[in-house]
Image (cartoon, rainbow, N blue to C red):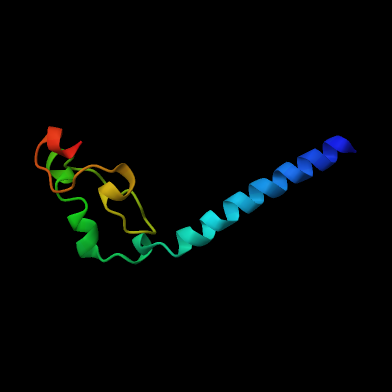
Length: 80
């Protein structure tokens, strides 16, 4: 009985910690960015990483949205 209560409490805390993130993710401005913003956030990256296929089929994201870095850079040192 004690172990069942412990597991239930742990799962409840996990659910509470995940739920706010899901709500925030839905409200993210990243989900509403324009194609121009996506291009701006990727332009320096694709100068070196040419030929990279589209990573996201349902959401438009720029390279730096996930990978960080400097999308305005034109050298490896500045970009990473």
